[in-house]
Length: 114
Ligand code: 5GP
Image 1: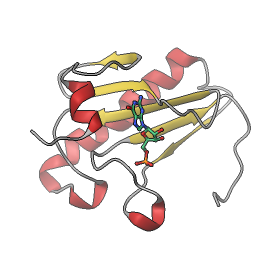
Image 2 (image 1 turned 90 degrees about the vertical axis):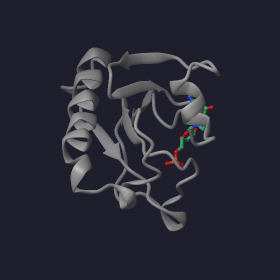
Image 3 (image 1 turned 135 degrees about the vertical axis):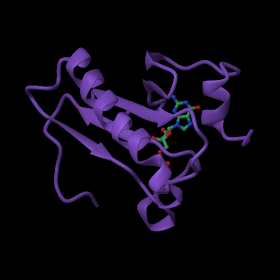
Image 4 (image 1 turned 180 degrees about the horizontal axis):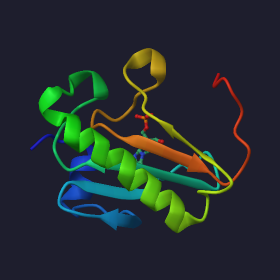
């Protein structure tokens, strides 16, 4: 088991505000929200970052996106709009080496990101 903060959240060793869970995926509120809705959708499988995903992970990666859609609907931002973001590596600002999809919404988001 990798020793990331997200592995500990999956194992319920540290608390998080979980908004969705199934056998493959977990979604919880980001501890430092950058928008009124800021939720992280993660696989329970340990994949450090999107660059490390393989063809064997294709169904799981699709699942993360449909979970994100479902959470967006539950949060009431499916009509107003939302953004899904994956930061991969240093230049993207990746800070936790367990794959996560950011779900951001609840306000107008600027583009491009800085
Ligand atoms: P990254 O920068 O790797 O794309 O995103 C990592 C995200 O994880 C950040 O937005 C950060 O606020 C969030 N985060 C880091 N530690 C924790 C934690 O212990 N709990 C929760 N809920 N979010 C965390």
